[in-house]
Length: 97
Image (tube, rainbow, N blue to C red):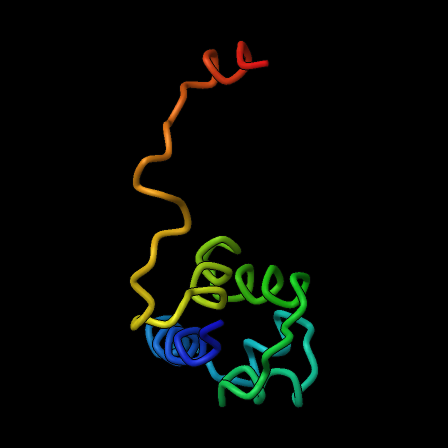
């Protein structure tokens, strides 16, 4: 997980939008404690609902925040699948069995 990447993005997004930190927390309806733990990269178990509300408050997509939050370490260069894995179209996948 990369709560640090998420924290950096949150700070940048707040600056870009020109809104206060407390306004984001209010818009997202999250507690001050949760909000500051997110901003300090001290929250390692963020709820999906929290990230969705934050995305709405920051005018971004939940998938973007999730991608940042669940990003692997930049030092991790392994692929999630073998290079020999075959890729199928949706039609081909339905015919496999």
